[in-house]
Length: 119
Image 1 (cartoon, rainbow, N blue to C red):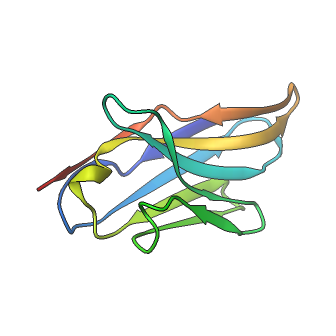
Image 2: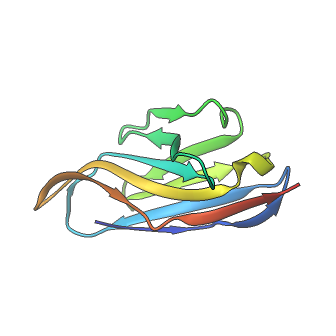
């Protein structure tokens, strides 16, 4: 499974960005998708996740500002980020958790996209 992210960039505080992540490959059964982020010197953290049925999870720091959604027909997940803060600056990684392919069930990661929020 290949995950291709897009939509990162530089934005001023209070602005917005929309990240996209499209999955492709020999997918037998998709599962949850999510977004993680990692800032310099910090551990990677879960930002938001969405199950195939649509239930969602958000980290405390982004609740009320970020919205995760997915298009199951396109195996694509989106992250709408509003009211961005400088502390949201990080590399954002797309994750496909527990997806089934011909080789079994495993997690997959995108290459990461940089989000920089200036004050």
